[in-house]
Length: 558
Image (tube, rainbow, N blue to C red; front, side):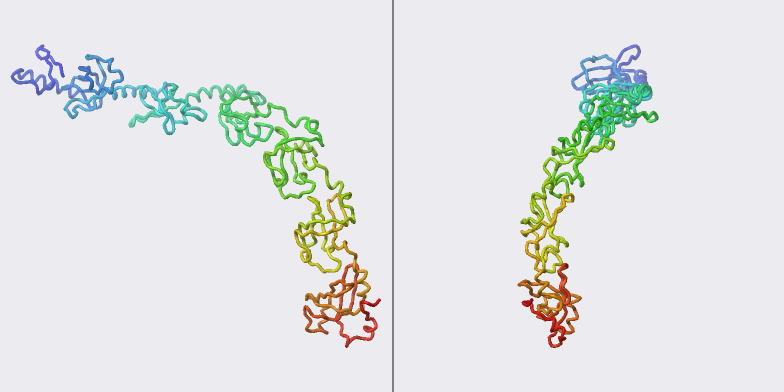
């Protein structure tokens, strides 16, 4: 509805077309047309204009902006519609001069937004600090209410240190600066970090001027990584390396420090160019190696936890900062395990004996076998030379057989001590693993922890009798049991015992078809009692010389 004075008379009309020619003169209609034309030229779409509230109804508020028709604003655009009354002035945004019903399309919310946006633009240009309320968490940050407009606060711009709990900030009112505006999309990006940095840098510079190496300062834990702990020392960034957290072994810094924890640290180094320091926590405690010899004298017993296992031993933490090594050779007197894990496991609490201390190298040697008597200390008493015992063959090598006399006590039967008479190329030709065998103790070396055993010594040496029966020049009979490159191995009998001897290859001159299993007469060429060796040559009675016949003797003759 529009108010206009014509010839000093106030009239109200809703539309120019309602002017009837019989009610108004032609001059009055022309004057009214001119008035509306001028109002249309003054008002443009997209502008914010002043208006007057004409009427308030449940569906909206009618506003007159001096146009040929009023506009209707939805009541939903008013947060406090009860505070408005007809006749009140109001600023509105002209969205369209003609809507679907031919009336103006107005918006109070957009007018309010544009009014605030002007302030926002000014705050951005002047970098003015503004306040806002954190509304809700979204991907990557938080939505903040700034002067009734939603703005975005990125997670990286909340604080100078990483923020772990965004939800804890919701409903809090904070100070921000506008760091970015998008005029087209009407987007606002905020930063709280930029304000905090200014305050932080001021405190940091002051702290940097006053701090000295060796100072003890209060610090707040701000971040924990695999390699150390980052702290804030009154605005100054500090790093405590994992090696400076404790004198003891630290698997991860989180074992020592917690986020936001307040701790005392010692300043170890200052980098004035990068404006940061290296700090230490363990330096505030006494060095654990001071007085180590008095605390843990050699020969004393200690208790500790297994903290590391290597191929050569296990490290035992006796106390924080003090670890000792139990070498694999110090784990058992008798067992010979290939890896320490056969005896110990991570986390085991064990007792050990201090064997040696090297304070300068910060090394302690420990042993657990020393907790028990050394069975080798009385080995000669338990297994005197010449005594007979029974054992189990545990291993075979090319040079002999290892026999277990008791758990952890092994002895070696050399291949030459297995049999008086048999020619053995490998112990497996005569014995096998797991077999029980009778042995005699031949020698003991306690220092080297070695026992020499014999099997053949359980019977008398038959070579005394063999030396009479197999004298050089004797004629004997035997059976070929093996063919080798240089001749044959034959088995001959002496004193009801089979003796293996070597028959020269030249025997083929007499016996060209000689083969394994054939019986043959032979002459003893060599008898070596010490090396237990008999060498033979072929013998043909028809071709025997007088001296051969003269030297012939039978086994049963002296």
